[in-house]
Length: 195
View 1 (cartoon, rainbow, N blue to C red):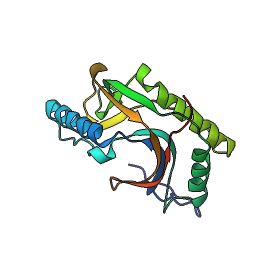
View 2: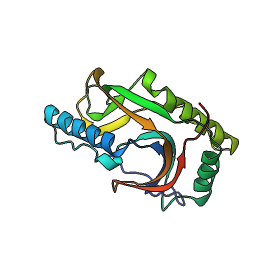
View 3: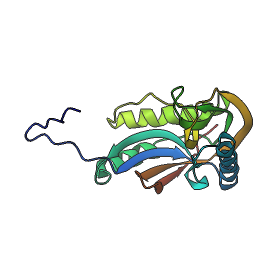
């Protein structure tokens, strides 16, 4: 194996320790039902993968970056300012299919997805994207609404499942402690726009 060459004055950047994102969380009862489904999914697949804990199940609306050594205050403040400008009515979300985000045949995340039932999430994402853009935060058009159930799952074709629904009444700014399986809520905003 060839040795890694280092140029003087150029060192590898430190690994990221902190992530920042906007998210939507299911209510407690819905999260418990999703967690139970994820446990059964892992058992049926006969893998060592563990399902995500009920309190970590969420939909990432907009990832705002991973950072080394803490979150930059200006990024948090920009996210807060963008969020306060939104005026969107509460809506219902429905996930009605299970799929894999793995690359066949490798293992990867098993996720819940939807079609028509996730349009409200698209609208919320797009509104956040526009508000962040007004503050000079680079756009990120990649958005596939999903709830990750477990990592390291075998690849599988998309298939319908019993629909999982909940009313989205708020969204949250989250500090993810990377590699420590912990999310810290930084701020929460109610949806209160006119239908």
